[in-house]
Figure 1 (tube, rainbow, N blue to C red):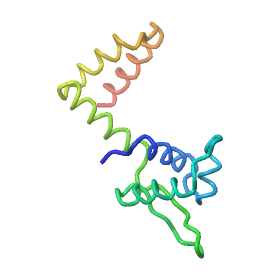
Figure 2 (spheres, rainbow, N blue to C red; figure 1 turned 90 degrees about the vertical axis):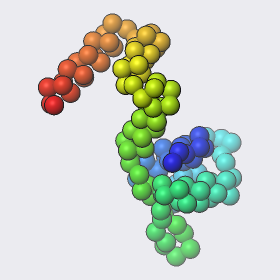
Figure 3 (cartoon, one colour; figure 1 turned 90 degrees about the horizontal axis):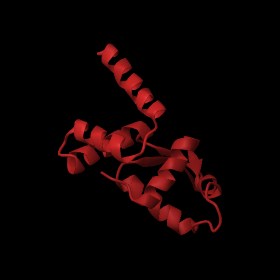
Figure 4 (cartoon, rainbow, N blue to C red; figure 1 turned 45 degrees about the vertical axis):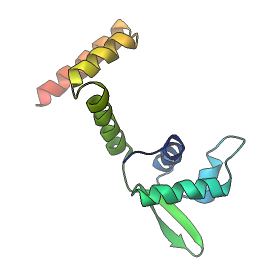
Length: 121
């Protein structure tokens, strides 16, 4: 399941904070801050999707993520590769390295990452 752009923004705040009350989340936004009801609606949707949960402290809810950032973005990247690159990591890598104007140093760094991963296999 995918998060909307607004939900991803809330989720990024939760990942960074690890757990947060509504006031903590609102503090993360720059002016003009979204309304409490907007954040509450987003959190409810994210809860329904299985991304967040909360603990009750009196009438206040302390929210926390149920999904790690790495897990979420890994699934999103796999979906991107499947839907836009014919399920081919090689096509994705080719597009990424050709279209993002990487420097020679960045390409060498990517090669090192791949070489290190191959050594682990």
